Length: 469
Length: 144
Image 1 (cartoon, rainbow over the protein chains, first blue to last red):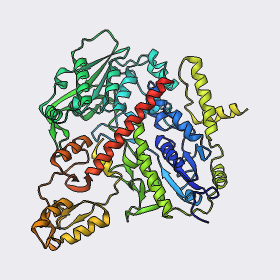
Image 2: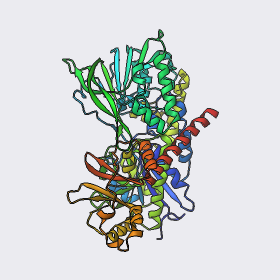
Image 3: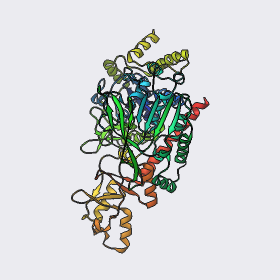
Image 4: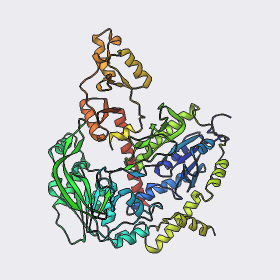
């Protein structure tokens, strides 16, 4: 038999993880001229879309509109979804090697970075990623309980995830009721007694990672005023020099917005969102029940690295901020997959341009690839995964041309389906997901929301059964 | 975006050379690995210089015996190093202003990688492409 990729001998590819990167790898492969490819997208959850469903904030529906692109990719005859099938549990790497010529890991970054400070594990101190997954109705997180009876909350971090968390905490129940936030989260936040949300950034305003549209949106909240301390948004000499050397319009706009917030007077809105700069938590302080009671902050100054990046450096000035809840939002981190080499330093699969490497020889492992956050780390917007996936697909096509692919004993779509059905009889196809989607949207329509999500796997399975009946 | 995400897809291996090795050996490494600069490490593994194609070209007209010269005679000693947490943008600016095409990346005193101007330009290009794509998707969602 000749090289796979022909009509009679299609190239069989398994992609692990149905987030944006999984879809973009599929798209680039399906667009290869003269290549007949069959893609099985294997996903742990019954539902696809990864962080677009479980990460993007429920009040950002326009960003979620990207799923229309994924549905188009899924409509290709060479594409199949196997949802509710877990790599390492239902299917091992050895299983995949028997059924596919190429395997691509696009599992994203599923855990959070730690702050590495005392008291980080007190009750009431949460990874922001857990809270995000909870309010987005991720089945693994739907049973978590957050205590919103506290009046003061701290969010550590200045990225767009930190901004999402701040915004969701500050939104009124009426605002949230127009989103697709998980129903239990809406109910819990209805009873929130939070009055102050403090966002804590270790660097200055010019270095804050959030983008201007997100910052502007904070100023338009119905139930919360944004407060910024004037002394913390006054530009320091190093930042000014850096900006003069390399004038960046977006940074100037960000500073203008922040200075506007610093100058505005408080209204009678029930909540305050306080954005702080040049402070780092050094310790969380707890009460007798090991519940967070305060965060101890050190004030920072900035110094320039040799390459010119402005980094924080602690001073000897401290302050204590009493808070009952802390969300740590200092970045996501990848989780190793069973049997796949991992680079602990960067929290990614060990790879070169998307080719997975042997841990010892650092040479490519034949037939194994990676794309997205588990390849390069958690950076960029959803669209950044598109060029990233293309780089990986180019390597795959190059290797195919060289004959450097796996030699599966059972490279037939029917063999894969049979094996998966044995291991997970309840797997979800794309058609199953589309039916679930229709039900969610209908449930939403009834209450004026874009959708009401199914948040438990059992409920998803039951809904599929009902819709088939 | 920071330098760490560039290193994440470059594998773990940094091609290095010792100061007493000959320029000919350096050229062989350039060709074999398709690279334009080598990090020079001493016996203790300390970073002591960087040797680029341009360093060799600059030295060549004055020296017929360039191929057998030692790396330490030609390498640049006055080097700027990068840390994994450095912002992509500031590294891009530094490389452009100082006209440097390669910078070693050092983490807590240990060499962990090297970034080239090509790496930086590619990372910036992918970042912009991603942003454009995401913005377009949102605008099109508005139009529907």
